[in-house]
Figure 1 (cartoon, rainbow, N blue to C red):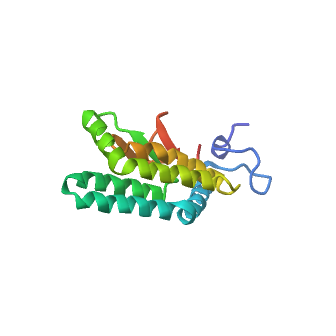
Figure 2 (tube, rainbow, N blue to C red; figure 1 turned 90 degrees about the horizontal axis):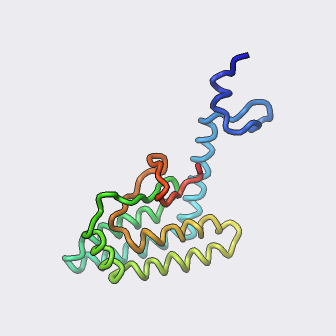
Figure 3 (cartoon, rainbow, N blue to C red; figure 1 turned 135 degrees about the vertical axis):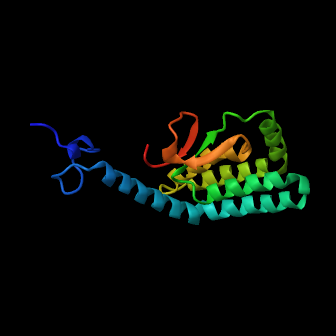
Length: 171
């Protein structure tokens, strides 16, 4: 008996009603639903509040004309902090000395207090069972809040690197 194409795409041997295996599209649909649930919980418990912090940082950076690129970075990370699951942060290979200098200035202007916000929020979220995955996600955001320059935010399914901060339930 030759295996059917559906059997080759099986993710778990027994899912659903107990008779048929879960297909890859069903598993991906499940991952999308879990990601949506995590993003909604994240938005209510941490995402909106962290976004407000990044918005304040962006407004402060716009006040000084020289730091407008930092405001753009703050908004980019703020939108990522608003809805992180399903997206990932990767290092930009072509980032050089300019990114390093930008990261040092960023740390002085806004990086340290935004990072502190992620650490405090992560600890508070980890105090509850439901909040543990969200707290761990908050700790993963620490690296990008400290050094945003030289990093890109991309969909999680578009990378296959080991040096990525993954906010996906598919792994």
